[in-house]
Image (tube, rainbow, N blue to C red; front, top):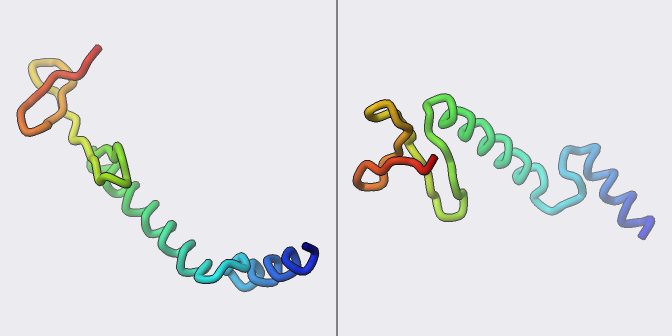
Length: 76
C-alpha cells in the first residue's frame, strides 16, 4: 500500500498522478472545461454530456423558451 502511495506521489510530481495517461486525461478535462465555458458564454446550456444534449434558451413573447424542433414554453 505504501509503495502505491509513493508511486502515485512520484507521478503527481511529474504531472501524471501515477495514473497511466494521467497527464493526457487532465489535459483533456482542461480542454473540455474551457470549451464548456465558451459555449456557456454564447448562451448554450449543456444538459447531458453523454448524450450530447444541449439547449438554446431564449425569450419569446416575454416567456423563457427553448427550441426542440418546435418552440416550447418552459414550465414555470
